[in-house]
Image (cartoon, rainbow, N blue to C red):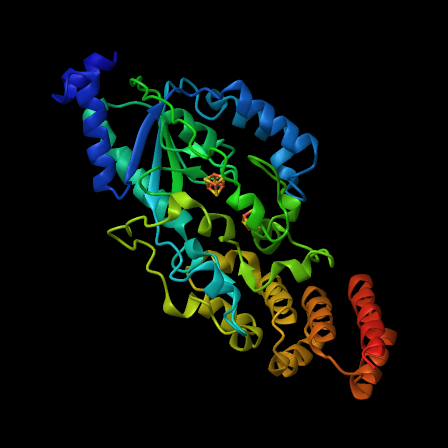
Length: 398
Ligand code: SF4
Ligand code: SF4
């Protein structure tokens, strides 16, 4: 059937030529990495997924543990009937323009993960994948296919490893020897049968830099990230209050976290990608917290137009900024935080109270009285708790 397709398209007749042609086409669509694998998930990856979910490491991403989604992840044929091949693709993005030390010492500034400093990659990649998939018809003939980016129940790092795109590092992300880990993954599932590439080999060796640097100790064992502790999860996926004991460990990260990638030796001296497809915006590189804390709903939507940050909504984002402000040691941020004590969102109010308690170093009678009044009128149980803890802290600052 496939050879008929190739004859029909008048294109390369050998599998090697065909793979090379597909790779060239992928490159033209912006995918620096393109490899082919069977739609099968190795036992070790299935077991890792089962253990991860069984141990509750998916946190409040309940959808990840749903039976149907689990079975789709483990059996790609449940995603596309008759699927014979997965084309795994990687699109590079710009690494951070600063070192980890520069990020940690950027006073009064927040850190947005580098992949989120420009346009939303989901939209961009999907368009690119669809265009590439359409072009594939010209070499493969008509066949069934679907494209996926991140949000679908696809074990993309496992497939990328089996396809030879890159091995899954101890921080759980895919690493390519030439490009490091600064790339997005996407997949095309197709009913066309193509020759698979060789799987990736592992090159972490005895390194443990990512495990050692992780501020919240989220990499609980090599290759196992407990999402409940990971700053990426806490600042993006997690909808509720951020556990109080984790807040001081989060530093100034306000959307995602690149720490484990920044220290990875495979990201040292990686040549920059030729294109900045997502158009990194200067204002998203270490933005000033004082400006972010002042964003109202309309400002937030405008500031993060077309950005993935917009997806989490203003309340969650300002929550993250309050945590960063509380960790900043910058008393100049106190007026911005005090203004948020009246915010409509209890999520914002609670984290603002916590941040005020971290920054106010004296016993401040005016503030204490203010918080006592709010304690009597606050209806939200979590905000109430933050007020109670902050009053106690201020009383100890004598
Ligand atoms: S993203 Fe940050 S918090 Fe999450 S595992 Fe990496 S270093 Fe740790
Ligand atoms: S920092 Fe070291 S252990 Fe972690 S992913 Fe990179 S090479 Fe592997």
